[in-house]
Image 1 (cartoon, rainbow, N blue to C red):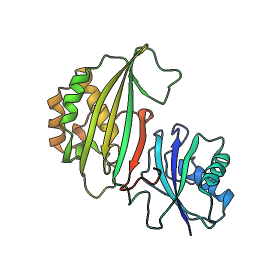
Image 2 (cartoon, one colour):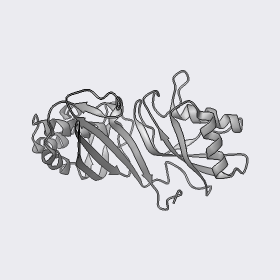
Image 3 (tube, rainbow, N blue to C red):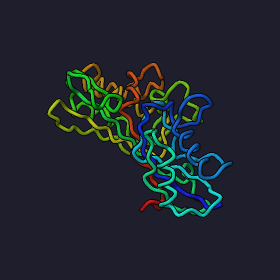
Image 4 (cartoon, one colour):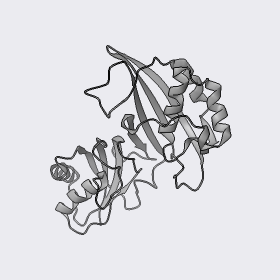
Length: 255
């Protein structure tokens, strides 16, 4: 059976996460229903990472085995037709080797979190950014983020329902930048690692927001990390500002 990789963009707001659910809308379920219009009885698709309810994707990757030998462009066009009107877009479909797997072949996941500091609530970007009203100190957040880089036990920064076998992960990048806007300032958190724990990125951002607001010092982030205690974490940021920005592979199938 020919295998295809799909590069997927979606608005996570109307979905209860990526993973297929029996009664609730999901991104996986939406794409699989579209695939079933093309070929019945297909196996389920595999994904690089299961996003939570309300989390978006700019570059999610999934793999699927088809019975027919589809032209990749026609496959993407057909899927985009059948997923309508759901806010899901197949950016590209490519034929890949049979041993390529969206999850197990990945060597990096990249996340983007958008935090908007302004007084008025966002009307056009509701559920696309996390809006806070107080001013934030960019340098303080950068100083706090440095304590999280590298290989650590991230028990403090993972959900209590996380099913990962180990809380140890290596965080390769956590860069905070600020973009001036006419209505305020947008802070962007670029986070990269081979793999992440459940709610890890949102826990990072919620904690660093407290640093930016002056409620925590940058050193408090290190203290929380070393506590290895979920109770030591700052508040978890809401899902609407989080985007799965991309997935890295030894050889990019979409290049």
